[in-house]
Length: 367
Ligand code: F6P
Image 1 (cartoon, rainbow, N blue to C red):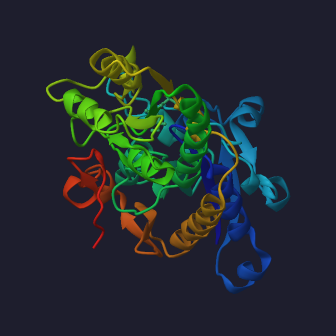
Image 2: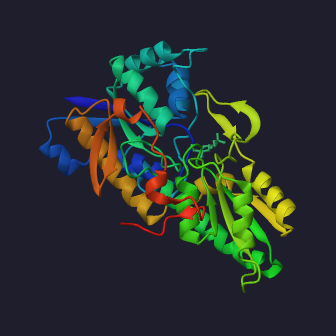
Image 3: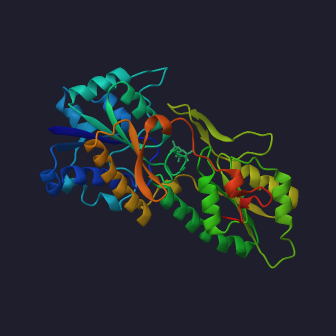
């Protein structure tokens, strides 16, 4: 039997995506493994996520050349070293109720002779993969998101690289913050989950960490900063997640854009916090928004390894006919979970377990 695999990347890019595509391709086309299998594979890359599958015209060779990318071991050989996604990505939602293009997508999948789709993405991409699965299209998911908020997996690709970026950037800020005796408020991404801020803040030794799961009292933030007055400490780092909000307040958005999945464009809380600190304490304060830097750069060693494992897992799942599921990493092991479970809720920070609500920082008790 010959199976045609289509691979695509959806949602925000991150480090590690190219590695998954490489390992799906290499594992599917591996000659040694092929000799032991009853199936053989073709692998094709879909450009720009779900959009590519909607816009491609299977009857037009030029359109196919634009939207599809032939993948073989030579093409993907070096991909795992590079960040971003060579397949391109989009936030296109084929099931957007205001513009439902799912039937077109399904028709194209059939016309192109695609037997199974490997969708690499976050909760939105997994949601589409699940809906397609319900409609009879075979799908397998691979988790990626720097937000690390996908339910059912302890790890999502891109997270480690992003944490490393946060740590490195804060290390850089420390020298200038110290020289000028300033407070620096650093905004991380993460949407409604505080993982990036919490772990990025812990790794970089931030004094205060503000996350969406625990609305903060700005007076408490200022009191904590005042406590350091008179000490031999010349500066403080405050890390704030883009989705964090003051008690009684709401998330700050940077503009009115809402994407195809209904996501708001969060951003700007660092400026709010920095202004409030300066006004209430008189401490000279600056802010910085790390923004898309967190998604850029080449993948960390961990993201390369996880990309490899997830890519291999996706092919195993296809061979085992584990469709409608997402590869996942649970307690140190690769496994898989039904997409239906994944999309039920987000994995957010458990305050009781991980957050010290007095210090506004990670807990100093881990057992
Ligand atoms: O979900 C990943 C993420 O990086 C979020 O942390 C952030 O809010 C969002 O994507 C930014 O999206 P965009 O690239 O569309 O600006």
